[in-house]
Image (cartoon, rainbow, N blue to C red):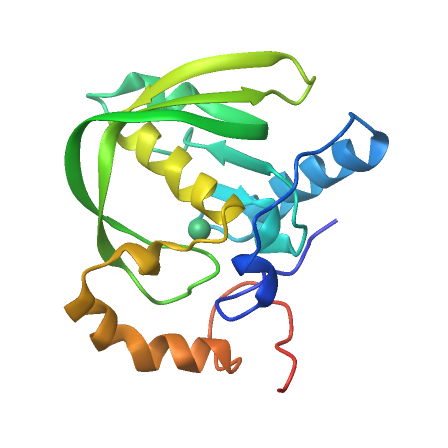
Length: 188
Ligand code: NI
């Protein structure tokens, strides 16, 4: 089932998401719905459960559409992260532009560490502890941020944040143009 995307300003994006206690048919359905939603949204390579209104620790990443001959590992990277917990970030600080399905029309430079160690379960609830590097580390941390109630625009420089402030406010009011279905913003 295609799920609507919750955009900037929706309270669920600011909550710390809860661990999923058990593997149930509902969890498997949510994973399958999130894949379907990610692919329908076109340009996205990752989606976190809060972005579809579910405050649980789950995200999916698919980099198989990446065209990067220097990094063949991206083209085979398709993974489900259940109950991810950050162990450490290390390496060096790298700046790169990011975007987010919940913040349509905005792309900004974000500094992140080049390596990350993450504990998580896969879609079969098997435990993993892996180190991710470079672009994969960035995508993992972008999605992980969603589970902690953060979005990438929280991490841009003070000056840039000032410059995009009015755009963000428009999105929060529901003034959004994008090619996919979004959750209607409640008038406050
Ligand atoms: Ni995002």
